Length: 352
Image 1 (tube, one colour):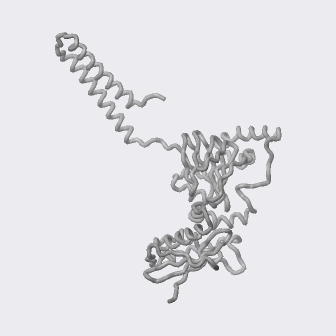
Image 2 (tube, one colour; image 1 turned 135 degrees about the vertical axis):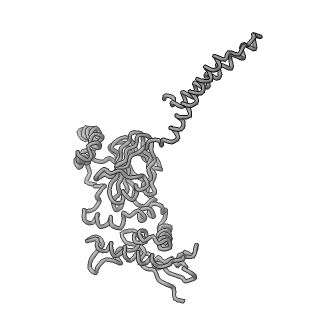
Image 3 (cartoon, one colour; image 1 turned 45 degrees about the vertical axis):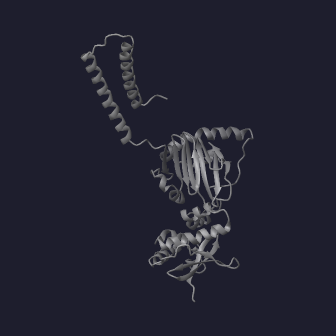
């Protein structure tokens, strides 16, 4: 690796200073008569001044210019760039392409994924899984599960299960890419598709009927995603190591949201079944989504001065209920399970 321009200039300045010191000291050591030569002094002073100015300019330029990003994040559909801070929210609504020019750490909800140098991956989520599809390079999760080109890292929404590294159909994935939008991805994945074709020919790989990106029929999967793929819902599952912890975390996050007037999080944690028409389901249409959002907005519009540390679980038998206090008034919050996910089912005052 070459030295930086700043390093070259500083090194040169040091060399000149040291050379001058040695020259004069040797002369004194040998008992020679040392005469002060103004021409040499002025020449050295000019050189040092010029080099010092160059070093200062180079250092200022290095400080003022930010290092280039080590990873690029783009939406899969239209390849619009996004910031790493919006990664989880973007993955909730679609796929995201990540290209790393050097080793990079990526945070996907509560999962940390390490990408190797010159890696290209596609991050996505279904109503049950998170996945990291490796087109080039490699990816490793925090437990050391690794995937190379042609494999995919997959995790359930619940953080208690270890991830898996599985082969995916590179040729099938390439067939869905639009050359106009995904030409760069086609170039990357072609060699992987050719390698897999050879392994299939020799019987080293065989296709399965598992569809990781769409585990159910399209209508049912789309309906589940409306309420299961929201960032706060996935994050709560990822953080929880036991059902009791998951229930309490959900209750605590909900009262934090209404106390902070965060209608988006409050809406995401309200049970969808409360807002569907009779005889309908959350899977058949999305009309209930607007109703839930409006209810959450009216809920957080109220004042909720929640007493810190007041949340506690009621008896473990029967419904999952938690009690908390608002200005010395007790409330009961009840959770219900829907599609293996805790949602807020009701919130009521406790009448003395």
